Each structure stands twice: as structure tokens, then as C-alpha cells.
Image (tube, rainbow, N blue to C red; front, side, top):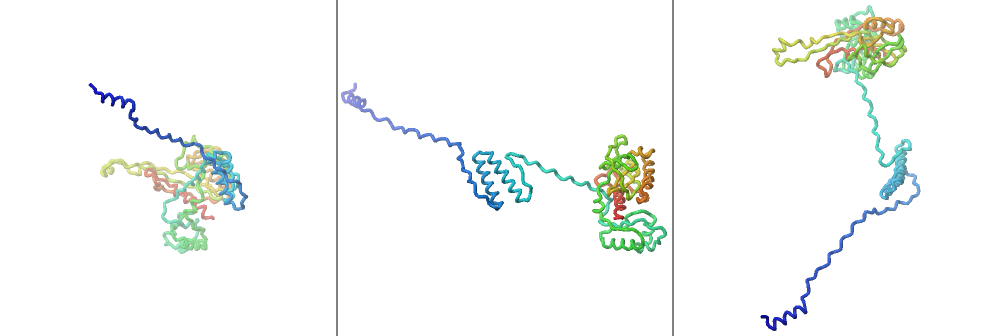
Length: 365
């Protein structure tokens, strides 16, 4: 049993309880940051400055302040004024419309000029000589050219306009041309850049009359289309042709080497040049600083001259020479096939023909 002292202790504990442990209040919850953007006062209008750079700086400051305040109308107006000020600084016409979010329109890339493929040559300059007058002594021509008698005789027999000497020394070729001119032979020095600068030839697809041809800006002579699907072309009225250059261009199709061993290629494979070759008749008409090109199989001349394409072209040459007697008619030239860069299955003489036809025009300049 619990004694009297234990009862008294219990009574005392109940009458005077021990204090509970102190619990601190939770810390105050932090306030969420305000999403409101503080408004920045736009700079007050200042007196107009005569310096355009200071005006541009002031307009940029106004535009930045308007953007921060969310006033997009004032922002766009400030940008327009800044663009006009910048245009005055650049010397450009004012009135450029600049609006926020406007996408810039890319400028069209300039069209790359087409490159004229000339005959292969490592030397940039060429001496172009006209037709040797009949009765001229070979020794006189050899002395003017600075070559031996055999070379001079070959140039005489070739006839017509042709390139006789290539060199990297332009003054030397100019001196030879001067001696030729003194001897009575037309001559000039031409470089490859000058020949290429004459522009691409225009393909003649047909003729409305003897004076009106139809042309297109396409190299139809490289891959002649089907005669029944020739393009219509645009009319070209002949003004006064200066040169008529007839000739033939040789084309050659090659076979690829398919055999693996040299013994098999020698005994079973066909020769590389056995793919077939042909010659196309061609006629270049120089008129108005351009070259109009008629190619066998790539033009329809039934309106002005009946017959096959080759016969029609020959008859057209005679009619053109009679119609414009001042036009110089070059002797017929045959251009042999040469390797085509980047194509090991084809050879053609179009590079040599381009050079020949342009040399004829450069001789008279």
C-alpha cells in the first residue's frame, strides 16, 4: 500500500503539473515574387539634334523603353523613325517600313553566267590569221609569221580564218600580227576571255521567213532533241549578218572498258572508239553581236527551204549570202572530235567549233 507520504506527493504533482515543453511558432511563409514588370518612364522628348547619329541613339532609347512598357504601337513607331534615320545616314531612300516581327525577304542570288567550252589549250593568247591572198609567196608569209616554210605553206593551203600560233607572250604575237597586216594579211591577237565574253550562241529551231528566224537560249546541239518536239522559240529578225560560218562537227561515242584483265580486253572487248561516230552540219550566223547556230537535225527549215536538214541548210547559206552580199562567207571547216571534260564516253568537236566561230568574229574587231 502506498503510505501517507506517497499520497501527498501524488496530490502535489496533480495540483502543480510540470510545464509542457515550449514549441516555437512556424516561421512566416515567404511572399511570392510579384510578376508585375516595373514600369520605366520613357525619356522625355528632347530638343531635336542636327546630328543624325544622336537622333538615331535617341530613337533606339525610346524604342527600348516602349518595349519594356509593353507599348508595341510606340515601339513600332520608334523603329520606323530609326529606320528612316539610318537610311538617311546610308544615303538610301527613306520610307522603309519596319514593323516588329516582320521577316526579312532574302535577296535572289545572281544567276551564274554559263561558261563557254572552248578547245583545250594551256596558253591564253592566240594569233588569228585571215585567208591568205592568192598569189602571195610562201617565203613572205613565213617571214611575217616568223615560222619555217613548211608551216607557212600549211597555213596557206588550209584557207579561211584560223588560229596559227598560241603563246603566253602577247607582245610577241602582236608584233607578228603587225607584220602580217603590213604584208596584206588580216591578223589579230585574241585571248580566251575575249572569246568567251561573246556569250552563248542561240540555237535556231526554225524560220518564219528568210529574214525571221526562231531562236532559243539552249545548247540544243549538245543533245539534239527529237525533230518532232523542237521548241517554238522566239522570233529573231536578221538585221545585217556580218559572217556566215559553215562547217561540220564530228561526234564520237565511246565504249567503256568492262573487262577486268588486260588479256580479256585485248582479245574479247571492243576498241574504246568503236561506239560509233558521225558528223553534223552546222551554220553560224553572226548578227547583232550574237551567234545564231543552225545544227543538222535540230532545226526545221521547211517554211523557207524544202528538203532534208543538210540540204536545206546548204541552200539557206546560198540564199543568205545572196540576200546580204556584204556578209563574209567562211570556207567550210571540219572540227574533229576531242575529249570532253568529265565525260569518258563521248568526244565531240564543239569546243573547237566555238573557238573557230568566235575567232572569225574577233578577227574583224
